[in-house]
Image (cartoon, rainbow, N blue to C red):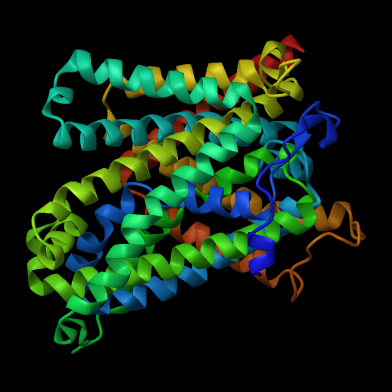
Length: 446
């Protein structure tokens, strides 16, 4: 495992890399993709999650983590098989389109590049600006905040146009940087735990545990975004399953450790620090200087997610344009850098425009519902892909136990969708309706 995780992130000479039929180059290995998955999951949520879960479950929060880990594992096992069968760019969209055809491909494309990609990227960027405004009050003002957001998206777009290896390298470095304060808090903070704060006196009702697990599923979401760059992954049938396993395992251990430290150090006082529980935990354990340290960590963490979005979501736009679902100019590949540069500019520009609105809540609501629909589509796509190709390449990753895991994953996602609020359901339905109209217009134009 160590040898696999230490493999080169990129190939220095693009001429030596495998060039795909899409005109892209395969330079992303297991380590880079694993860290990309970690980067996309570990964002702003971990810095507020311990307080929210403790408010709901108290010391029993650990139970919800294990329940959630089972649910997430089912979904991402389906991603592992689908990702090893469909190796072109597009991630979830490519899996669903290959399985169910152009209509569902079009809908999933919109859910992926716009509903989840653009809108969630904009929401994360807004969260980054909020963190920066706490550390530097000047960003409370509209003009400085707008300039900050425009600068961030411009720099990240230029980095990713320069070459996928540069975007991957930036993501890897940023992931290491964001993990340092969290791992330090988990390890050093363990010495300050008051163990009586972690004693489970009574078990909460099953419904309450389910509500906590539902909250955690959203915190674990986003890792599949790293698979959008499937057309630039080396040996996808091996790299995708291994990367999902390593990435999700690291996130689960990290989240569980952070929850235990925050709850063990603060105890009941955790509920008095709902907005920034990790900042309060570090300050209690290490002293006042830790507040600044953790704020910097939060900024780096959120910036890393934004960087991951700018790296990965343009690949979904590129794939959709390549298939004729979006204007052809979005499928252009830079002749020198071999990157989908027009898709990068388009995605970053649109995300920046939504981020400038500052409408975090609505952006988060629609993007979360879109993600659940993509999870459902991927789970069902595994069953259909098996039917379409019962004997795939020998190197493909095939889930055991027949249809059991994809069916169980679909049921879990349907259960999650049934718990959506009215606002989430309305926003998601509107996006689906507009996407259907868009498909009809596209088909008539074709």
